[in-house]
Image (cartoon, rainbow, N blue to C red; front, side, top):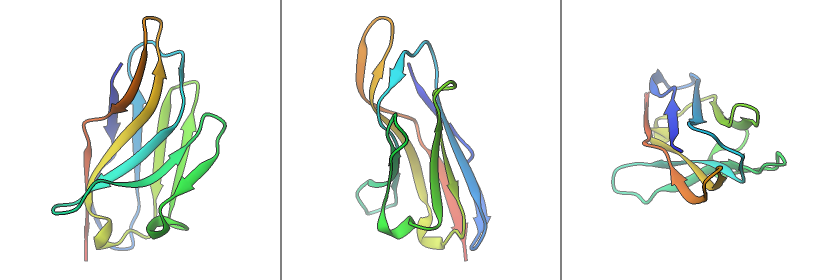
Length: 120
């Protein structure tokens, strides 16, 4: 099973982007799905996450601007990013804490990352 992100790109400040992350392969269930971002010189930080039950959690810096959601049937998580700021620039990574497949349970699964660049 792999997590495959899409939707990154270049946008002007104040604009919007929607990131998607889909789990490939046969998946029975995924526990918590989240988005992290990393900028040069900084540690990777959590942006938002969502449980299987739909409970969400956001970093203070994105509250009110970003919305995380998931489609259980498609094993996909989304991040709608509005009112983007230059400081939102970074590589955004999708993460799953636990993925159950027919063969095994995978833990701490990361996507390859997608670049988001916000110009001022």
